[in-house]
Image (cartoon, rainbow, N blue to C red; front, side):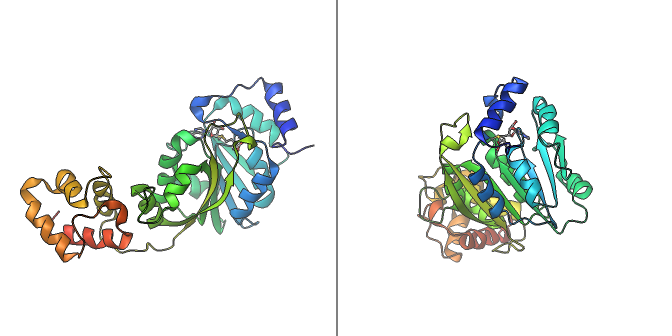
Length: 290
Ligand code: SAM
């Protein structure tokens, strides 16, 4: 039998089950086996590695993961897809489909229950684009035992995540993602490999999860708060942003002193600061009692 992701088999499955796509669930299925092979290769899977897939759809990527990994657990929200997956993935005994919302599932419990005995876990997905950032942030912030995250996402979001200081794409999302992982764009993908075709460009993003953050701070959440404060209004200076969103006008002088001590020019914009500078600034703000 042909692979699920071949255009003819996908069309046959969709027809057989009378499946209609739900735009609200970000349903754009992959119909190109080459792209899938590249995604699987980027995830660096082997028999001792497990894969967690988010949104298996009709199983296009799941099938390729099942061939490369020791075990695959796939979380799907759309109940209509469950009987289809049971059928299409029937030949693969190492696949476990879980019905649920990836943003709601108890991931720690799921890892403990499903991945016991596996040395490494990769998160691999063609993500529903409407929830890309919350899903990525959840996997990064919960610090689950994940070696890498390989995801198809909107190209523009992938570029923002990989952006370096100085450009207009660099923002809180870039810095927070880079705190947890080393991101790279593995591949740019044309919309012709999806059914239906999304009206945005796509890219495969690979996040190699760090074993240790690149900067040390006492309170990670406070670092993120300072970073987000500095980007409240992109065109404003860090001084103005920090006054309005963290310090208040009555503590302006204290902020001036802190920035001087941190050797950071108050007229700079958030987009020019490195993560090391944000960390230095955060430590001094925390020392001042914030
Ligand atoms: N993996 C399939 C493929 O590549 O052909 C389908 C990818 S499609 C872009 C996204 C999938 O995620 C859909 O099957 C959709 O139903 C599912 N989905 C959407 N929101 C979800 C959520 N919150 N939790 C789990 N799955 C979700």
